[in-house]
Length: 103
Image: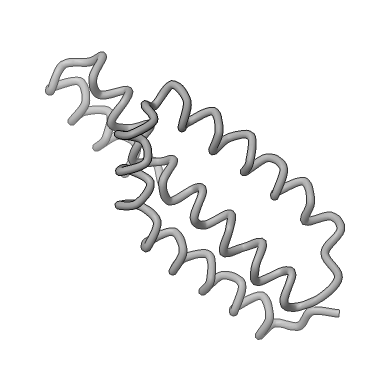
């Protein structure tokens, strides 16, 4: 049974992995290309997210949260970069501002 401190540790692991994975993920995306890297991240993220149903303790919970953070941390900037290559600068700034306001 997980308690509040375990969930806080999982959140911390997620956020640290999220922050630390942005640059390495961008380098991998540059090497492989976004057409391969983005779907790979989505599939692995889905598998890990679905596998959380089978978690049986604190260690597996924290580890799964860290892996999800690594995948999501690299996914968001790469999708933003890929989408911005199809739009003009004004549209990108407006969309980013709107998404930050809605959060």
